[in-house]
Image 1: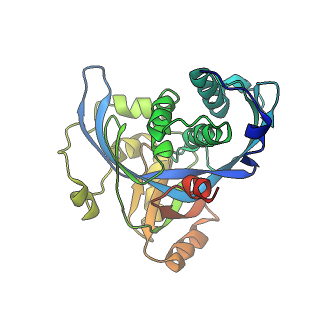
Image 2 (image 1 turned 120 degrees about the horizontal axis):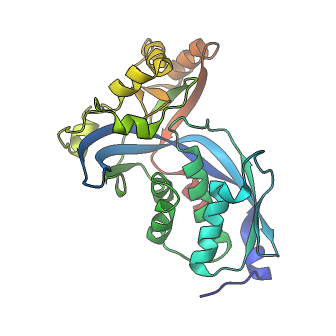
Length: 293
C-alpha cells in the first residue's frame, strides 16, 4: 500500500507541536535464565516518568526525512528518530516527508531510555500525523527492530516485562516522586550481561510479589563492582531513601512518598551530582496528549 502527502494530512492537528518522549525506570530487574542464543531471560517492571525529551514534527513536501539540528559528527540516517521515520515509511509505502526537531533533556547512556523513547514517539506520532492507522501492536513490532526498549514506550503504560523484556502486561505500581542521580560514567550493558559474576538463576516471582516489595536488581552488584561512580551514587542517595539501579544504569534512583521529601533530597544532592527530580507515571504523557487530539 502507498500513501502520498496530501493537504489533508498536512492539516492534521499536531504538526508543529511539542510531543513528549518520557524517561522510564526499571523498578525491578531479575535474571531468571539464559537462552541458547545468549539472550537473558528477565523479569522487570517499567514505569514512565514526567521527565521528557520533546519532539516537534514539521511536514516536508519532498518526501524526505531530516533533522532540524543534526548532531555534529553523527550521520542523520543513524539518528534513531530518522531511522524510526524511515522504517515507518518503508513499512507502509508512505510518501510523506518530515523534519524532526528534538529538545534533549534526558541524559545519554543513563538507562532512562532517551533514544528509545524518542524513536517510539516518532513512530506513534507520525503514525497519527500521516494517517497510517497502524495498530499499537504493529508499532511495537517495528519498534523492536530499532531497539529492545522501544516497544515499552510504544506500549505507553507501566509494564511487567518477561522473556527478554518483550512480553509486556500493564501493571499499576504507586506513582511516587523520584530522585535520580546520573553518575559521570557510561555502563557497558553488554559487558555486564557477559560478566561471569552476574546472577542468572533468580527465582521467578509474581506481580504481587513485586508490589509487596520484591524490587531488587540483579545487575547492581556487578555494576557497582565495575563502576565506582555508580557505587558512590547509590551511597549518596541512600542517605535519603532506599537507592536502586535502573536497568544496568548508570542512573540510580530512590522513590519518595512526598514531593517535599524528594525536593529536600534533590536540593541536598544537586551541588555534587547531576540529579533529576521527577514523578512516576503509569500512563505515558505521549498518549495523554494524543487523546486530547
